[in-house]
Image 1 (tube, rainbow, N blue to C red):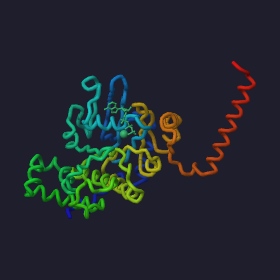
Image 2: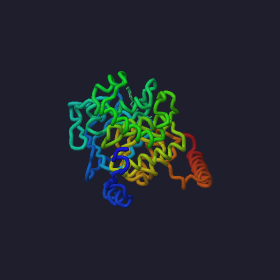
Image 3: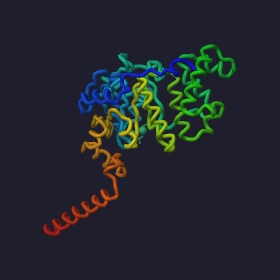
Image 4: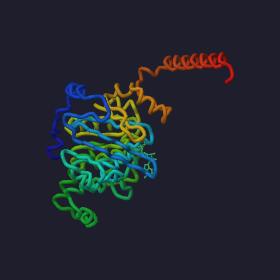
Length: 330
Ligand SMILES: Nc1ncnc2c1ncn2[C@@H]1O[C@H](COP(=O)(O)OP(=O)(O)OP(=O)(O)O)[C@@H](O)[C@H]1O
Ligand SMILES: [Mg+2]
């Protein structure tokens, strides 16, 4: 095992009290400035035909924290990820769109150079290559270090020094994600949850400074979800910045240090999980588009609370009906 795994570095943000002290100083408004932003985004607009999918005027992501990006279906979260990682181009490209990562402007950069600058992402629909083995998928994740020769050497079956080092690193990551036994299996034979883990492990092969996860828990069974959450928290504790998209509000409450909310392409709220989930604008955005969303406060969702809610609604309906009858036909 190499040193970086046996003795994981502990980042400044491993301490919950330190995180709370830091984030309590952030303004809970969309586009709030952060004392040490690793990612700064300005004027990113993406239109599809006449429809504006993304219109983010300003967003800063603090280094070393877990930031959740939430919002109802179609809010523009995945499109936003695509734009800032170079997989798509903003309509405002060259017309005011600007974003920088770790002090470097990356708005005219290709997806692979964005990844090389230390910002890697996973996909909502997993992109593990089914017809390749687990280890070959991992080796592809390291391609930035190994260069183009990786493909050739993979097919030649002769791996140089760099590839051997990468394989050792891949083994460590696979062990960490409980996939080592599957090392030589085809990625296509893995369960949906295991493929999510593989995708995350692969993203970590390039030692990113920030990892962006698009719905990492979707399709993952509850047992794996727990360990995936643990992995994400460990990454933060080791000093990595995490930006993740998630629909499950229990997960969001459980692991995020800060939450940004998108609705209809715009950033509509930012704050701690508790703050944003009690924000009327956020509740409206969800109720408008996503009626069945449970905002994740278990305590409020007892059977009694639901009965009370049903009674209140019935009472309000009765009052409204009585008023309408009193007013008579219009
Ligand atoms: N390539 C495309 N062409 C046309 N419209 C698109 C394209 N990609 C996304 N959209 C539209 O842009 C809007 C934002 O979609 P996006 O996938 O970014 O939302 P999302 O917040 O990731 O949603 P979900 O939570 O369901 O994943 C949607 O209305 C979607 O239909
Ligand atoms: Mg999406």
